[in-house]
Image (cartoon, rainbow, N blue to C red; front, top):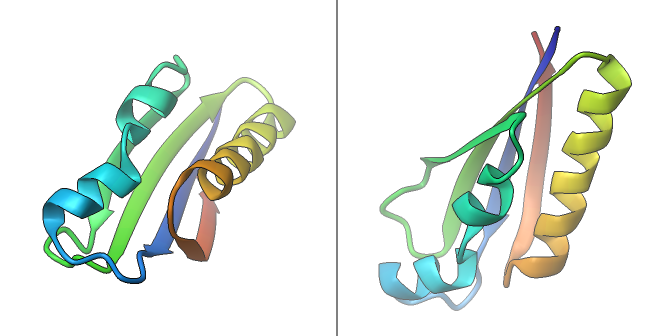
Length: 93
């Protein structure tokens, strides 16, 4: 069993309220929570309007599967979220 913790810090330039932040980050739980091998939560910058931090725990039988799913999450997030990924950190347990 292989486990990775992927943490992404996202800048949301021009975001003026928590409501707008929720709209811009819209549906990360629904999108990535459908994967049976992924757990997702907003893990930081909860009260900031212009930033967000999300953590994904990815589990798989093979290291390459976990690494591939982490890359897929990063790619999808960069394409679908109205913001910039400032930092992506992977930790393998």
